[in-house]
Structure formats: C-alpha cells, structure tokens
Length: 186
Ligand SMILES: [Zn+2]
Image (cartoon, rainbow, N blue to C red; front, side, top):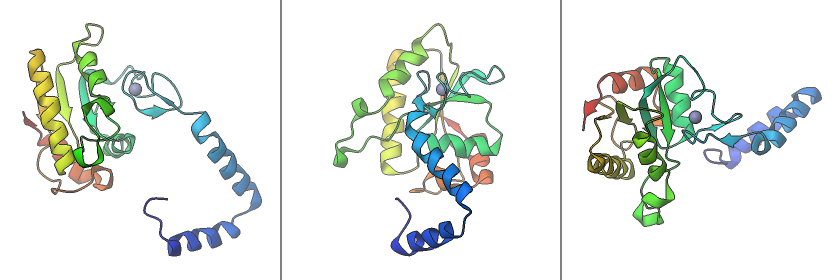
C-alpha cells in the first residue's frame, strides 16, 4: 500500500491483533464492500456510494462553480476546509507524457462537455490541479481548451500558499483555504 513500509505494516498488524474480533469483522466487511458499493458519479466522476454523488445531489451547493481536481482525495481535503460551496470535477490524474498519460486518459472531454451543457450553466472553473509539472501542464491544457470554446466563463487557478511540487491531498486546511481565496484568473 502506498506510504506504508514494512515497519508500518508490522505495527499495523500487531495493532490489529489487539482489536476485538467484532471490530475486525466489521472492518473486513467494509473492505469487502469497498469496490462493490462504490460508483463513479456520472456528473463529476467522484467516487461515491450514490450516482449522482452526495455533493452533486446537494441542493445547497453552488452548481455554477466547478473546481477541477486530480483525485477524489483532493475533494476530501477541500471539503474539510468547509469553505468551498461549489461542486467538483475529478480528472483522475494529470497529463504525464513520461507515463503515457495524455488528455484522452483523463476526464477532460467530460469536463468540456459539462461546461458547454445548458442544463448546468457554469460561471467559474477553478483549476485546482497540483502545483507540480504535470498539474501545471494539465491546468494549461484545460485553460486552452476552455478558451477555444469561447464560453462566458471565469477560469481561475489556486493562489499562493501551496508550495511548488506539493500534493494538495496533504495540504492543511488553512493553506487550502488561502489558496482558494487567493485564486487568480487565467
Ligand atoms: Zn458528483
């Protein structure tokens, strides 16, 4: 598992040995259902138990503001700040020529279709890809594609606070809030 070395794995195993059997059963059942009970939201491509997901089907969210993120975990990070009231679009990765990931491997076309739809009029796209080379390349590509469409749309990119090369998933709530508030127009 990512981020878990042999030592951590050992520690977790010994920890689990001390957990009551009933809790272990619950854990194994959750694990069993993990893939069976989750679906990709047809609107935003977030991983959720329902389609549309709980965020897309929430009537209090501002549907005209769409934040584009690389991974579903980035949504969790922004939701924790409690400051963002719009909805999301998950790309499931970033453009990475070295690993043969081009725009077609990501949900970029779905995003372009989504912003052109009359059903869900969008007024702002916040590009919140990671401040890495891949994330920047993805942001530039999406910005270009959106500009070609010539829609009446504000396109913004997250502002200061997030160090270059960092992963949004690991940024703390204050940093993410600052980045959101300091977003600049592209
Ligand atoms: Zn959704």
